[in-house]
Length: 325
Image 1 (cartoon, rainbow, N blue to C red):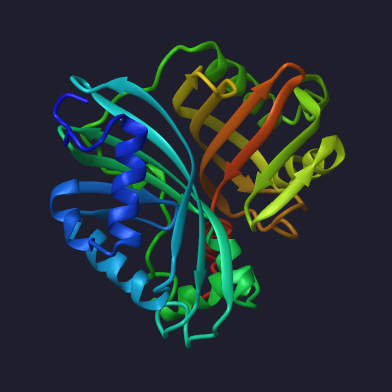
Image 2 (cartoon, helix red, strand yellow):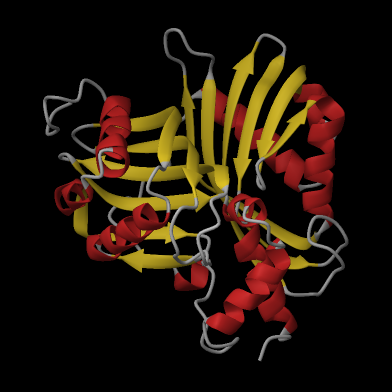
């Protein structure tokens, strides 16, 4: 761990450790040295530049959800300390809505949702980030309809012309990390599966997945076995037309005491052109930022974690409809 604080024994230990320090030990000010001053943080909802914005958002979240826990399910990573390392960190969050904030009046409701964050770190500091939060799960568990929430968000932000625009290639900001991962075979296996699924080849699930596989999906959905996993992918892809699918970052890993794993950050540009997960087709252009993790076993893919932000997608559908003034 050259260049990193000696208290961290490995890169996953660094990622898990600073996450615990910042959020659960509430040492938010450590972001002044754990995050670079000009860090670019991309999420499906927006692009944020600078650690001050990240610090402000962290304080706001902790004020609204003071008991939030961030349970690190996995860190899949590539690189080395000299060139920099990229972690794809999957988190299961629990939180109680105890105070008023961006999600409205305190409801006392308990939440569970996943986040996957791809972070580039070098010399004890993160300087580039891509973060996908299951915003739809938060909204649903607070008792709201995701489509209606996205519509109201546009209105609250000043209407279609003035609202915060969801992330797309058009508003991306180049950061210091230009890597694409590694060439481990398990990353390529997952990449091939995703390409098939996005192209509508749902039969890849029965040929590539363990019969007892589990899928973990947005809206905090869990799918068990072929039929339920097929149902998720069919409903998602059925909503989209003219799909252009891009893999931006690909990692495969083999480690002691772990199943072979892979992490892929991807995007797709499409038209809301069919009836499926997002209702009747509107013709709106859509950009989806997604991250998928997978674990493999002797009978194929055993666990799949695919995450995207339903709120950001619904916001694009409503903006594309021009139905919000």
